[in-house]
Length: 228
Image 1 (cartoon, rainbow, N blue to C red):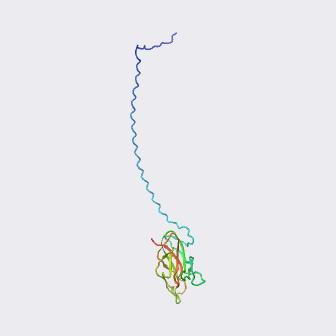
Image 2 (image 1 turned 180 degrees about the horizontal axis):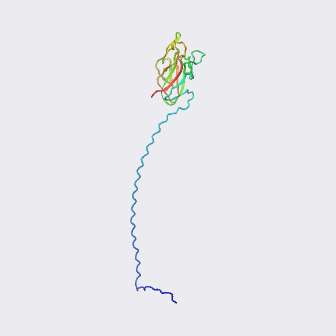
Image 3 (image 1 turned 90 degrees about the vertical axis):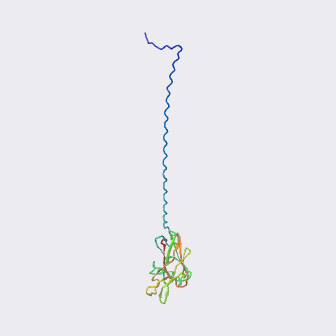
């Protein structure tokens, strides 16, 4: 039976097995070019400063203890004399300071003040500090024979202060009653004081009688911030 045959080259005597040729040098990979520099991001411009929010003007708050009202810019604050604090002695014993007066702003006025040293004190709040003008409304009590004549209001008959600081004013004249009437309190006329400084918060305005002569009857005061 026949299976197969093998065939092989005969090795040469003394011959060397040929070297296996070296693998060809793998060429160097070309240098990967450097990535170009990423350009710097341009500077982000500074955010402009947010302008300051303007101050919100103070909103008038609650009244201080003893205050009769709040003074704010652009408005006139009227305070009634009959609601003020009176100290001293009434000219006529046993009578009240306040009395009915139809011509007065609230139907009442203060009289019997003609005693040296008597005081009428008003307290009020101000929403802010500033210059203000205070006007007194007074009625003549200068009895001339049987009628009420004109009456001068001078710095010699009263001292007026705001928070302890004296307020100046010039002589002003209250007119006589119309037609020479002898009735009291038929009219109340303004006596304007020079500008004074109010402080934010509570203020104290005082009228002090400095004469024994007839002092005018007192209706009210008006307070207003001076125009800027």
